[in-house]
Image (tube, rainbow, N blue to C red; front, top):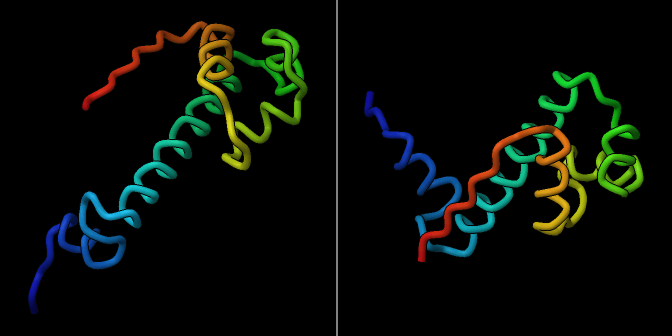
Length: 95
């Protein structure tokens, strides 16, 4: 029986790195991870979506969309959310 590395499986099922399919997958994965981190931290801080929304000036529905990765979000909103959650934000850009 042949074994495969994770990268080989990803290349086969999702596409090789640098292809539009793989780029989209990795982008969506990052968005999912950010939403999950926000929800987990919000719950740990014992805040409702409505309370967090009020702190940053958006409605509860916007927080829900952010946590459930169903809408677009600006970098400004993300920074406000993480500041309200007392989270340290580090932005790394590689070109």
